[in-house]
Image 1: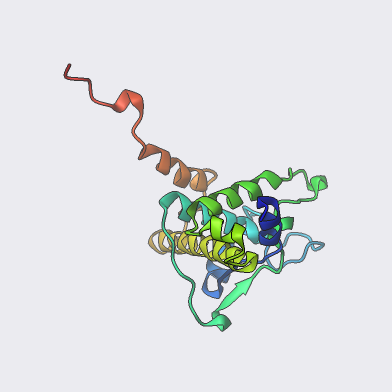
Image 2: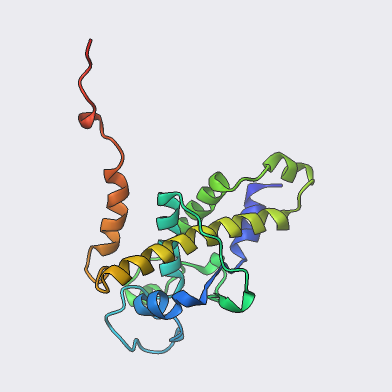
Length: 189
């Protein structure tokens, strides 16, 4: 099975998320539910389409290396109805740039973080559908941790993410935990 084909199958999917994050996270930060042709009701939105906050939530989960399974009740789940292959294909007229490479980075991270036997996939012992299901599950679980992380931060401080650098600071905090060469102790030799 060629990686490109697996990528294409993955990109046609719509990952799910828990409905409980719709009002307090997704609609709070995005134009989700407004339609692509309607004018922004609230100019204070940080992001455009709902999948943009999903991407941020995914990377929070990935960087923390924490996954949180979705609830089992399908009635409590929702998707954006927008396949991954179209994520980041933003109309440049609005002054924003497209970001198709981000999809490739997400896919690469999923391949690295999903416990899958790619040799079995290549031999046909597991189907491409099963492999994509596993990748999507990993993606959803990382994003679910990220949504939970954001919700917890907003319970403690409802204005936590309402600064220009709030999300940047979350990601910079990961870098702070990595020891740098200049922080290493001197050799005793």
